Length: 288
Image 1 (cartoon, rainbow, N blue to C red):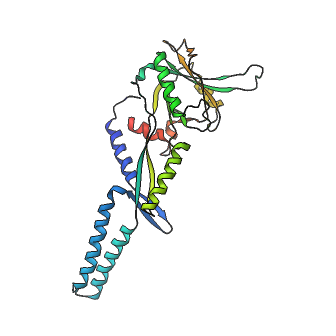
Image 2: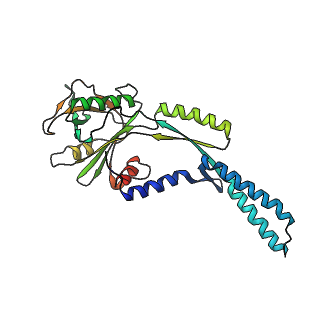
Image 3: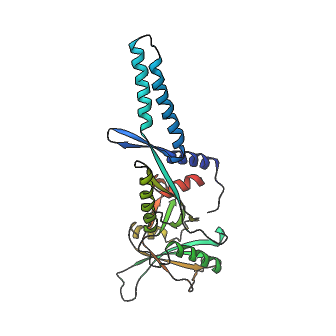
């Protein structure tokens, strides 16, 4: 998708970044405050100033014991509050990005259906396809997706995720690398070990720079998507992903030079049912 972010999307993006930079974490009866590591020096300076104020307060003569107690209690609470801070260490994990120029308009449609194996009419294999009006461009997209699967056509490790988000008479189709794939998790585990040596209480996370292929399409009267949606079960159901060529979506033909993928994770969901846990929720909020 290639669109300018509207003003509402920028506001949502601002608060989303703020929520990542400053958040609360329950710890027993109390809570911790997780804050980005770049603010560590500021927090240390504030704690140092609080310590100095506490030391110099010994030379202050208060009018009553009650005032002295309240002053000491305030210092204690401020110090306790800043002791609840835990620093978040993050590093960037970069998924493969396209090395070619993107032309979203060359992706002209999607196909949904099923394949019935010869001699076994009781089995239906789900089929999803992407249609392009430029074969060379389709080959570039195929190579990009292959880099996300680490060269595997049978993506049983779920390195790639696909989703269909239905919004009334149209739908959004997304395909993107899984930021929780085992390759990323192995690197994250090493990163966490390194951070624990630096800061025993520190929290280590990846910031993922992920490229998402997405396009919006209309649901026509002849679309098989409503039927496909009833048959397909979200989760681990494998499905075939094919590439098609056409100048007109009514006359599609398979691109035989491009090998099919087998994927295991297709999410079909109404836009109104998306939550903050869905990547598509944030993406569509930003795009408006």
